[in-house]
Structure formats: C-alpha cells, structure tokens
Image (cartoon, rainbow, N blue to C red):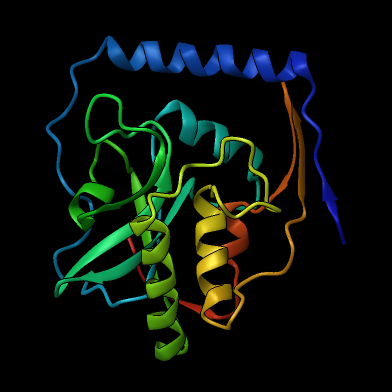
Amino acid sequence: MKEIRQIGLCQFFVWMMVLCGVALAGCSQSAPAERSILPPDVVLQTGDVVFRLGGGAMSHAVAYVDRDGAYSHVGIVVDSAGKKMIVHAVPGEPDFDGDPDRVKMDTPERFFSSINANTGEVCRPLDREVAARAAAAAMKFYERRALFDHHYDANDSTEVYCTELIVRAFEGAGQPLVGPPTHEFDLPGVHTVCWLPSDIHHSPYLKTISIF
C-alpha cells in the first residue's frame, strides 16, 4: 500500500526552527573528544550495509519523517586495495573547501565517528556473491563522483541520495533489497517519492550482525 506523508510549509519551517535551536544548544556545550563508536571486535565484510543515527540537524530531520526507523543514514562496505571502506552519499561532510555534496568513500572509523554517529548497526546480505556485486556497483558511483541528489528524485540515478545509492547498488547486483519508493513528501520547492533508511533496514535480504 502506498504511504503518503505531506509536510506543509508552516510545519516544515517550525520544525527547522526547532532543529536550529537544538544545534545552537549543542554549540554552547563543550564537545567531547572524537572517537569511533564501531566496536573493535566487529569485522566488516564487503557488501555489508551499515546504518548510523547522528545527533545533528539533518539526522533529526530524517528521524522525524522516518517514523518506522532507528537510523538516519546508510552506507555500504567496499574493498579498496585490500582495505575495508564505506561508500555513502552524504550532504554537508566536505573533504575540502569547495567539495560538493557527493558519493564519498570513508574509513569505517570516520563513518562511525562520534561526531556523526550516536548509534549504529551492521547488516549483512544473505548472499555473499550479491554483496560483492553490490559493493562493486556502489564503487562505480563513487568513481564517477556522482553528486548528492537534493531533489530526492528516484527516477534519475545520475545523482543519488543515501538510501537510493544502496537501492541502486543492489539492483545492479541483481537482488533488489526493496520495492519502489513509497514515501511521498511535499517540501518547499520539492515534491518527492523516496526511500527512507527503514525501508532498507527492514529488507528480508539482510541480517543484523551488530548493533551498537
């Protein structure tokens, strides 16, 4: 059944004002030392799908609309020259001045940095061959420096948002994790039907390896 959630302009701006208040309140306190929340005994495998929930404004906004989920962001583990890395599409985390919002490849420690993540989870595809092909498909998005899709347009894969990257990767591997997008939103200047992190997290083709 298609799920429709419409957010009016007034409600959206009120929510953004609340988020700004949360952010300002956080700035008034001394920040704790950065660390990785990924447990040292968790061994990542190529194709693992990793989730995190952060404490920033964007994480709060995603959590607000994704009422069925526990996470605000998702990525996929890849093998880069023998080292496990995480490919993900993310806004607001530039590597350098002028770096556009795009598909990135980060170390697990950076992806699960306490600056970006309060909680996390590692899920593993049931089929390891599918997992490897999905990781390779995600790497192609990274290698062509695909931009982050701020319009959340599931009909255009030249730019991708975080959940769309994972959906496209597994479609390319021949094992779709989810069906068509079902969450419809009206935001200022944007009407979209998109996938949310809970859609991927609830996929029957993934199993939980670790929650932290």
